[in-house]
Length: 220
Ligand code: 5RP
Image 1 (cartoon, helix red, strand yellow):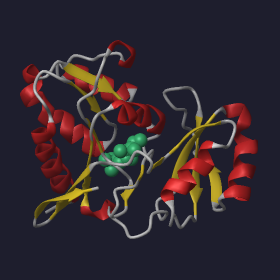
Image 2 (cartoon, rainbow, N blue to C red; image 1 turned 120 degrees about the vertical axis):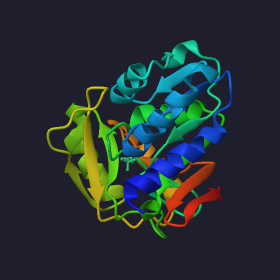
Image 3 (cartoon, protein in one colour; image 1 turned 30 degrees about the vertical axis):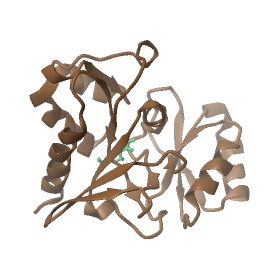
Image 4 (cartoon, protein in one colour; image 1 turned 45 degrees about the vertical axis):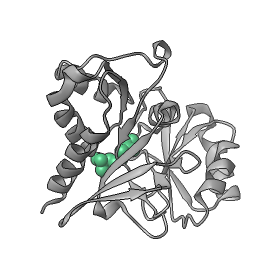
């Protein structure tokens, strides 16, 4: 089974968590794109979606799925998105596609967060994947210094990349994230950083993990 086939399998499985006549949140990335393809088959069963990025919004619209502005909705029944890494407690690293801020906002509003990923994303200790953080451009040097001082690792500005919010992404390499909840809070205190890519204090509720033997359901 290829990695894409595993992603497709979890995307299909995620449809079981989509409640009829509700608004759902949709993430960003290749696995989320497979989910959008699958969701098209039941687009008339839901009210519509809140998108976590401009690219996801365009993809949903191309399937004829209605988009809602987050400020106009009362509830999001479920948020479905991929991840760059997950540990066994369903703490996540996200932001490989640079959409972490909107993803974190939609995830925090949603009643339930279903993460969909192929088995390569499940790790013992997170940090091999560089941790993305979104930064206000004028603060980038300050933020890099603070990262080095407070949590360590080596921060690199992502080249030729501007977020949907007009900001920069800094990727932090060389971390061993043994306490993701504490690290997320430490990073939240750095002025000039908009969002960090640790989804730990609001991690996933369920991880649907694609394996060659089928979809594993891991509860947080
Ligand atoms: C985008 C994300 C994605 O969910 C993450 O990068 C995983 O992407 P993919 O499904 O392509 O492996 O956080 O900001």
